[in-house]
Length: 171
Image (tube, rainbow, N blue to C red; front, top):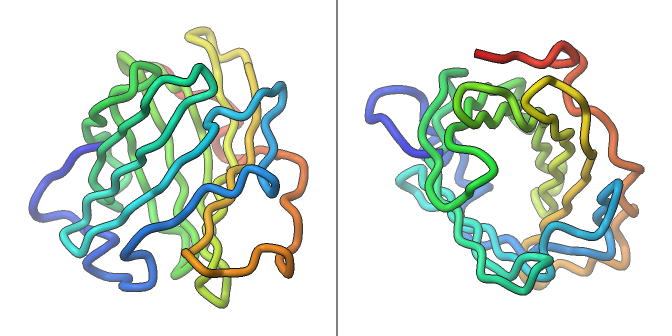
């Protein structure tokens, strides 16, 4: 995901997301496995940029950069070969739905939820091939540094993020 200057930028509106979030693999689920990342940090800036950095399941470095523009329109993503654009839509103060596309074909549909206490960020998504066949599902949990995950509820089995996206959008 990359940016435009005038649409709603989530980070400018919600200071609760700003800063670094650590990937919590023991609270995350990937079906089928393995986990997509061995380690990851997600950082949101006041300017609306989000950066995911870490190590992928293949031991290669990962760095994905995008802008948190909540206008439901596709915006460029840098650093991820699986997709080249993302469209984010605000559902409510704690939830955002998203669609990642590659060459205008939907490859990931998901939602992001910020916990009421503001300490965990949970992504729930499904991935699809170019023909719309479901390939996998994932629930990825991120926590603010210092938050004790032992007290948090384990992630549920990965589920579809938005039923509205059940019919995969292509082209």
